Image 1 (cartoon, rainbow, N blue to C red):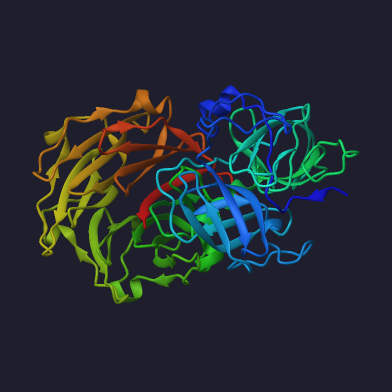
Image 2: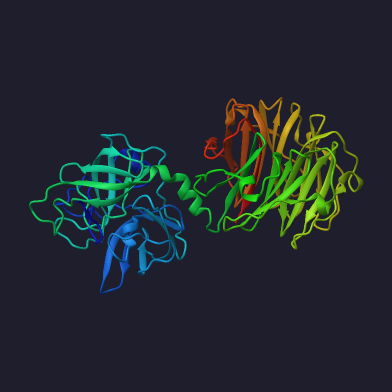
Length: 548
């Protein structure tokens, strides 16, 4: 039986050039367990050193930062009695994580896996300015070389205070475990428990659990085996993201309509995604959903859905992950006939809702007390508009910004903080002409409004900015940046100091890009893993919102 790793020890591993390039571990020579400590210049700021217990009875482990609030390590580090499971919640023993910058932070909450020796631990205060380990997407194949990193003991030291590394070869891979063998004299020792295993590309694929400890200080000289067992991490990306999504902080909330179902997912700060949840399974079955919109207020996510029966429904996903049941908006705000589009955004503690009924634009407000104002025809307080086929909303400088598409052209109006509406203005006259617009989305960043258009049956995409002064930047085509995609729907959200955009495409993908508002740079587009939880195709509308 492999010995458990519960006290300070060290690892030895040869780092690959790709792992170094990924910023997970800095360059260092291969180190044997019998060799010296890693040189001073060897650091891995994503690693944490764990001490669990008090001065008279403590144990040491290793872990890695997944974000500013969470570490990943071995659940066995926190057991009060060896061989027992670890309950969720506050650790039974005081647990201190020393971060890569030397800061010591208490671990105050545990979320363990029940199927493997792995746990996520929440820090009492966020780390700042440190890199994060990134969970990989694929497990290592047999024979693949892996890099292990840890603070465990060596052949000559009981409690080393610097990281060691070592190279291991993958033997077998099961659903929850990896078996590995150290190359040469590389071995996992006590204290390396919970340390990460990185693949050749620098992705985190495992968490070290148990080892034969051949060559470690305190191990009988007759024991020479360097084999070990690690908990798999690569197939826990979605689970880890869902745990982390409950922590306060900026996130991008997304709702995607597929068939007659609606799915909700969350994009986190490191661009990882939770799985997508069937909203009707959480908030009540309304008989099918045609399209939906989303708005964020603090950590809550307000979802407004247009049912296949033509009714408008509202629900809230609370910051703790629980859902309220769908409520019929028409019961308070009035029933609109032939509704085809809805769009919502938050302004302070209110949800501003705009709906298209019989080609006309109507507006309502969900007040902070949960009541809805009656729908009002925007044309009666703005200027005439009809034949609307698409609608978008945003909060810019506290004002409700609205863009409506009619006849393939975009028109803009705003409702200021006193409740007064401006007349509809032709966006093309201010920002430049495009082909016929089929979908539009926009998001505010401070007092600036960012607008993305899909035109020419979705085959071309454009971006423009409306400044607080009311002037518009010339439309800029994004087609070359986004690649050869045909867009069905566009979503946008202001998230922290950035603006996120997402597109559903004709080949049933969700493509995402982010514009850094400080540097005016779009990130490379990526395909969102929407297949995680989404059962129905084709994909239809998408909407985004930022939450804290």
